[in-house]
Image (cartoon, rainbow, N blue to C red; front, side, top):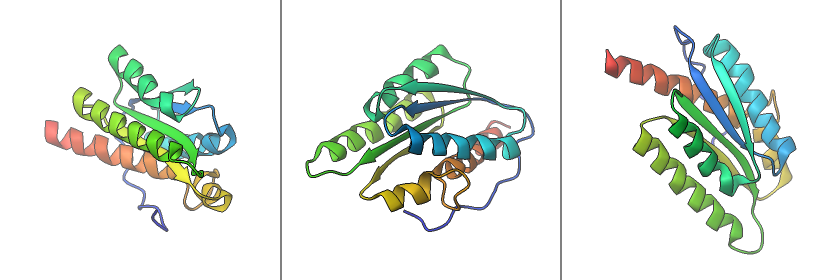
Length: 158
């Protein structure tokens, strides 16, 4: 994982409809991702509507994303979850399935899906990347990536 966040992009020129699909599992850490994204979007996507949908765990995130995208009207969707690396391959299997599903949904529906379903080996890594206000908060990073994607899409459509 990167040791620093990308710089802040220029703010969007008009509000967007965004959604966050977040795991309830490891809720305290996931809430830090949500808080980081919401705070950053307030600056770089002013006036945008952000809907938050909670699902049981990381494995259910792609289904939540798909359900929201099929409903229509979203400009981008964030996927937030935390998976702990264990002594079995379970975490790897879930992370791979989630990653492949999120990429497929983004490409199939032509909606940016910001993937921040993170796999950690230890608590220090998670705290550094999930704590609201942290210099490495991956929710903040996802907000910046979303705005860059939306700006790029606007430019290609002009």
